[in-house]
Image (cartoon, rainbow, N blue to C red; front, top):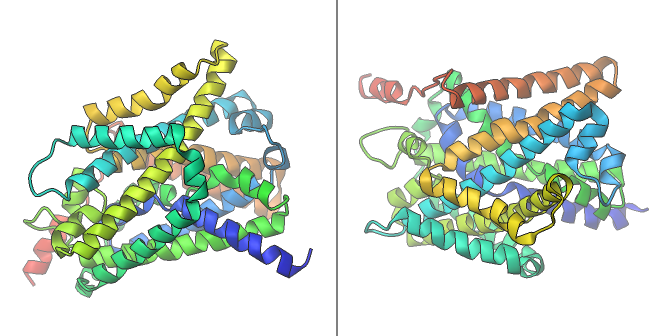
Length: 409
């Protein structure tokens, strides 16, 4: 196959990879990493990009997974790593899919609420987003597939507008803050921002299992995502105060579990920014909700067929969509917490530690050593995330200390 024949699919698949990375992760990234400061944030982002791209390469090289039309991750990991591998994959997949749906419901409600000057019950906004997004998931997937290119174009245009408008409010003095001790607490969100691994089998089939072309597409796609993440983190860290008396700060957004666009809308008072932020956030969350809702429904149906011997579609619908809604309604403002759990537990296990274990199992020498490095890095992220969620670790940002130091030279 000549280069001219492979160039188009490589670029088209690269854009698919980038599109799958645009979602709740990029909206959460500058708030979570911003509390570490710019330099630590960039170090963590580049490190996790390298690690997540490495595990994507490992998964893409597993022919029994990528070349089978019916293979699923739990069955694949059971074959490769035994029963323990299977159940780790099952639990991790449920954490990812349920956690993301919770994040989208909570995050979308926060974005919509920021538009109203008067208080609007967040539960009502959650219900509106839930019913619209769930209806589209059940009946509008064909429409979304047909309009996917247009959705991506609008998202990229609105993202560009967000960056340009936000850049006008940048204060480069804010870029000098550094708090390395908080960096590990921000890594789960970074992991989520580079997650696209569920679509690797689809990419492989669309590229006729040409591993070299697949790796090029994944590298280009994730590199575009890396640049977008870095630009977004820089403009938000420089555009928002770290801490202060106002609620429109990085620290306040972190404490309130808000996407970055919410405090920026309040500070900039720009109708163009507000409209673009609403379009970007809702398109990203709605499209991702539909994709992950479909994946979770299929996964629940497969589990019910295998272990409960029933293929009742109503039952799978109830178990797919009601738990995230109930969790969001009972525990509002879970956007950042949900993203942290998804990245630090679910994605970390199934697309971090398990691929690293495969590299260790099938290789010797430097590749095996790199497998141990991958497992160790993701194990550290998992340790910090579980420690914080279980109350065993309490990592607080030094934002207040930094601002006190700035005000008393």
